[in-house]
Image (cartoon, rainbow, N blue to C red):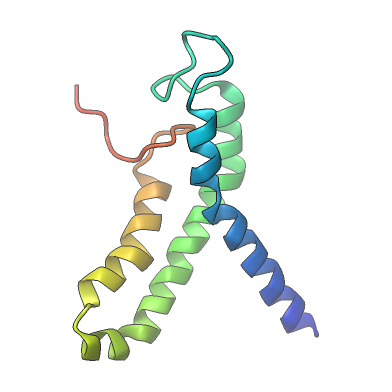
Length: 112
């Protein structure tokens, strides 16, 4: 029963993590009226939430995705889509965890 509860909790957290981009798009519309609040200048509470909640979950998703990629490797090799599986399971969560700026909703380095 303990394994079932742990698995259910992990799935619930993962599902919640996957819905974050949908909420970020709604929050991105700048309904507060503050001209300084944009994707390039997130507020402090966005940074704290990102640091304490989103980043640890994304790092965990990257580790779980890497494990799932290794387990699914024989099947993806047979299907001929190793690159797509690796990108979806490892690269995308890793990019969101390690490349995105703190509190931002889009990933990638800024090009000045």
